[in-house]
Length: 369
Ligand SMILES: [Mg+2]
Image (cartoon, rainbow, N blue to C red; front, side, top):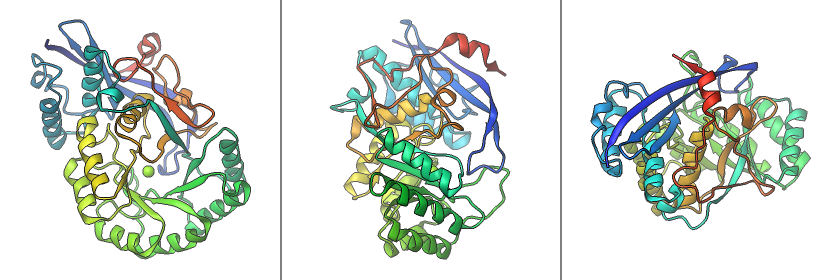
């Protein structure tokens, strides 16, 4: 069995009205989905998606002619390419999807999981006034969510804290609340500095009486010492690492003991192959793991299979903040949107691979480049 072809395509939908992501100073008017397909001489095709994968085009020959089942070897080549070029970990997803199709098993079973059912948290993405945020939280609780994540990005963090107060008043103890400070990285056009340790500590102290479950990316991603000091100074869990590029930076976090929750995303760093190792190392060090997954539905499926295969973990991120961010927008290109059930669980079935079913007509109609 051999890999015969790797194909990368790009597909965009217009966002009208635009999506005002709290962590991006520019409202998003377009959503691009980059899809990689790996074909074999036996007619099977594996699918992955995530970042644009610069560096993959022109290097397909490093995989073509090889046995697609040689996942560890392929992960090492992807790691090499991701060091020299961009993040091409979506290719690892496509290879795992293919491996599942070859073996007739869903990826979560290949990883050793006992159930395809995964608890999710509602991950909001927009800024709302305290009253509107409280209404959104109450609506999530009504739909069965037991966890919700709220973004901090007002001009002053005290305005953000006021939202948590309003939400707590509205929902009581019906949901755990996570706070994403989004200080770990910036969009390329955003020159604003990250918080300092003193900023993060003041926020943590203000949030302690409100029962916040974790404080996500309170400091720049490189401030390992600051995160450690913060972790020691507050009972609120510190979460970080969502866009870690390589396994070494994740291991630095584990060794430094600077986080309670590690959040690397299979499509952004390490792939399913690498993150399975990192998850086990984190667990052995007493650190929880649950991946970031703010991308499209295919990335969500990749992270969901990892969680179902290696769990139990903390709840999985489920990007969902209607009306601005809907499952229809997030999952464009899929034949069906991915939804949670009345208990906020995703249910992965026995479909071989990652269970991705593309809407080829829609993809053809939205193809760019
Ligand atoms: Mg985040």
